[in-house]
Amino acid sequence: MLKFYAKGGSDMGKESADWLKIKKAYVRGGKSYAELSQKYGVSVSTLSKVASKEHWAEARKECRQKAD
Image (tube, rainbow, N blue to C red; front, top):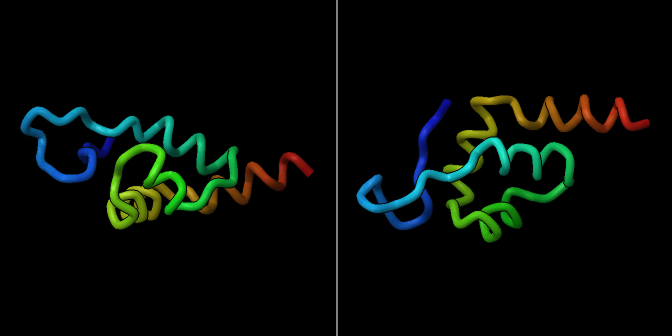
């Protein structure tokens, strides 16, 4: 599991982001990276890196195909 931290810092006193929750919101909810960035307090850049490494776009596409 990747460990990235909320906007503004390192691990010093910061809670790590709940990436599984963010991923579910992206895959199932159809939210954009910018919307998720605001909601969960992570940078768009970091969110994009995590999503790319974990293939969120493919998971979203598969989820939408199953729903149809």
